Amino acid sequence: MDCLFCKIVSGDIPADVVFDGERTLAFRDIAPKAPVHILVVPKVHYPDAATVAAADPALVGELITTAGQVAADQGVSEGGYRMIFNTGADGGQTVFHAHLHLLAGTKLPW
Ligand code: AMP
Image (cartoon, rainbow, N blue to C red; front, side, top):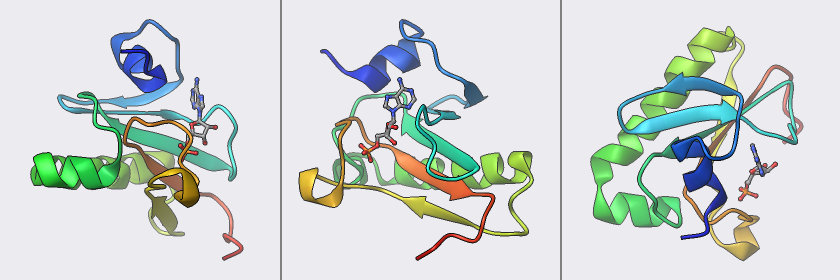
């Protein structure tokens, strides 16, 4: 399957990885929209977050737990952060491998 984030998971495409877990991987977004902008993905391919939730609800929890751990590692837990799952084209999703955006490091505008 020709999936960008599957290739990052497999190591075929390089990424700035900040967390490598059993079932989740976190790496810096290549075009950050905030001082801290990290993507958390399941290592197994699912097209979007709702599909992950339907197939493996525990894995959604692991994505959020990973984001919380990464936020702590990045020193932004206290200041706060935002977690976003863009879902589908109208939701702004452009890469169809489920991913959680972790945004932090500034007062987010909305
Ligand atoms: P979305 O628009 O919600 O599907 O988010 C996809 C995100 O992937 C965007 O924020 C992109 O900047 C990011 N992105 C695209 N290619 C790469 C890459 N090779 N490494 C890291 N992040 C990427």
